[in-house]
Image (cartoon, rainbow, N blue to C red; front, top):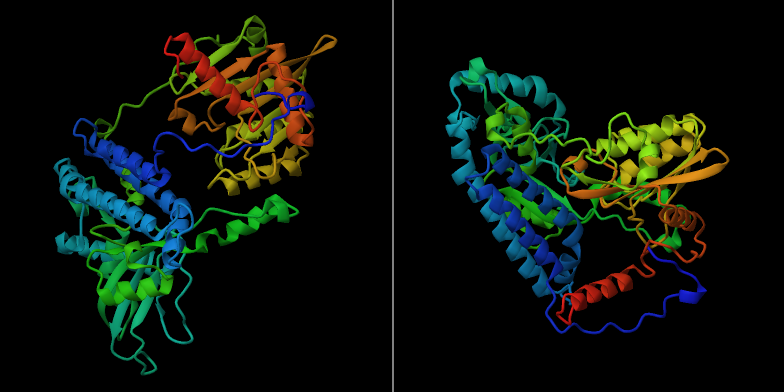
Length: 542
């Protein structure tokens, strides 16, 4: 991060220069990345349940892709107008690429993974394959645990199409015969609550094995007629709609960003529809009816030969106890540059420490903060928060620091996509007990990962810091490759102090010693450094 002052203030931006090479399309690059992730699910040298997990990861990534990236293309196609990169043809190309990827997913699931799972004794038993005893068990489960939570809605002028939440499981049914009032309302909707598990494990004595499951959608499908006594169930299909979910607020027009985002979260599940998934056998009548309700073009319709939400199959991975079908559990080592029982403050006086995650444990970072929280000589803790999760030991430690009388300042990034609610909740919890909570800079994301600890040592105040490429999230720290840097370097920690003051006051920064700060000089310094590396290597070019 680099200083920003009148002496070295950035010049006004100039018009961008067209690159001499073709740039990759961002949206197609995202889909291409997921093609590569899906390739791992095809690999026979990958443990079977991990192959299924990769399949689920692709589905989860696609959900987020549609929630965030699809709306602009869709709007351009609906308005029959081109808006820069978003055109009618861009929507068509993107939809075709997505359809191809989804088709590969379900082909792999049905033709490869399901047979392979069955060979290992792991079965997802459809209604047609169930024995009489299994059907009786499923019937009892439906009437006991499922039906009491379902409210079928027959559509008529007094019962319009219900609000369907983003990515929720639903059924659409076409009925025949008059209702209780003698009317011929033929379409009904059944919304399935999220609280119901999507994969249900059958008892071994009924299933004939320890790893037999039924999907919730097949349970409901087999008993749809029970929801409509006196009516005849004809055509039906499960369906799922994906909605635009990227929160957008005009930060120049709101007085309280946290309040505006909190209000936006209330409507996130009901944004503009961008994708409709239905069963492969869904009739044209029902699919056309749904497309009209959600105001979607036919290219936004995805007919899938299986569950409309493959993401929920991760429940199957968690329910099956078969370590031989999973990657061996990796146990990170204690950070090699740290000695258990030795004070972090004493160690950092000897020199900096690097922790390479996930090979070395993120627990070292938590231990650093824990020592600071319980050390009576520590006076202040400052930290940035981007993604911590809803259940965070780190945030509990910060709250304990407040209770112990330390000055705690937390810069919370409220716009960390899909973590907004957790971050708002943490911000409010910290504020309620006296921590100072900041929200960064309007119009920018505060993406730095920094912790600064100020400690009284004799008659002086000494700073200690943590910088990281990763988030303060112990769960993802077990998965992602990142560096953690612990330091007591006076010049570096002074820079970090300046950044925290800058984020709080928006005052100009003094000239920095070691850090480069975006959006002021980080880009320029990086490009210059790359050029220097190229020249040093003798290439003459970066």
